[in-house]
Length: 479
Figure 1 (cartoon, rainbow, N blue to C red):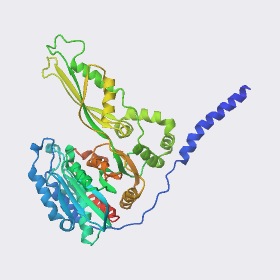
Figure 2 (figure 1 turned 90 degrees about the horizontal axis):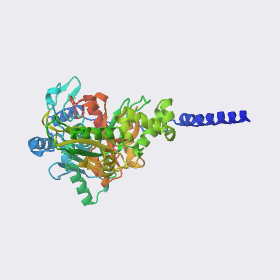
Figure 3 (figure 1 turned 180 degrees about the horizontal axis):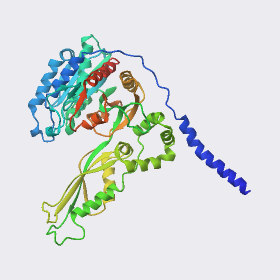
Figure 4 (figure 1 turned 45 degrees about the vertical axis):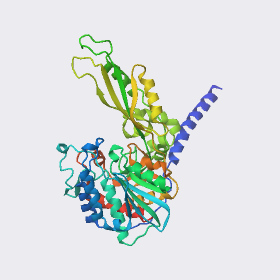
């Protein structure tokens, strides 16, 4: 009888091991639709020189508008008719508010429309940390240097070059196309919301919206060696939270057991030691299902059996941090702290600020409630600025198919996958009027290039400028 129990136990273990292994073996790439070649051409030198001219417009936005140079923004706006005469001849142009530029390219049927977005403002520069001038539009050794080449004048240039080229060829879209550009995205300004409000007033619901976001990247998913074209179908929310403590002040020679700074430090540790719970959102689930099938066997074993290995994946994410962890949970990054102005003076008031990126399914309020529970009494917790996560767009149907087709025809070797965008963009506002909002920066970006966005030495290889135009030529040709 004992041997029977042993046999049953062995069989049970083999079954428990065998089922996940079989699932992993069967977890292979799905049969993908193949797309015919779609050769396109553009004036490559014009695409490069036009972007260089855009870079020379110092359109730096600031939360303090008095620090902005309006003349540089006007210079940019006045540049567009000269660079893109076909677009201005055919498209109806409307300037909505101070920083909202909208072109309507009328199609044969106006019952459906699609929107191509970008922003033309840029973040500031610490020139001493750059190898080349940030606003000179310098072309050297096959590279165009400058703030905005990647984020996102390069995208705007791609959209406008494609439209200029197709109009010149006599192309008339089947449906209306809107080219929507904002000039204060970097400061969460009113540019994009103003355009969305205009669409709402006109009863316009775009069948597709394409904005900045993912890119074609290498070595970003465990076990996958092929390049991945990541299209954001949602983006996380954003919240800046202030934690503060009031103290009695006084001389530092006779301190209390815990100073205001000490209490804040304890609160900081309490939050960092207890990360937000993992949450497998729809974008992350679809990303894992798509790219996991292309991964090596060990990782396929994990992603094919997430119900079994979710705890292990969660532990790995907590330990490693970074992008994979950010895909799984709301993240908290403490970024600022202040106390007494004197080295030997107890602070009567101390504060620290954390930047949260909020996971789909959670909200600013739910996150604040969680933080209050973690830090306990005596710490004041208040929202400085916050916005909930965006809606999640569909990955089935015509709009998704159009995006996937244009990407696949432009980067043939890339695996196309949906993903959750960790940063924020203007496209979140369009979730109010469309279920088909996609975030894709039409470029293949190296790790170094991605790091230069909002960083130093932002630049783009000339070939990538041209390929961005090719992507939009293929996308617009479907409209």
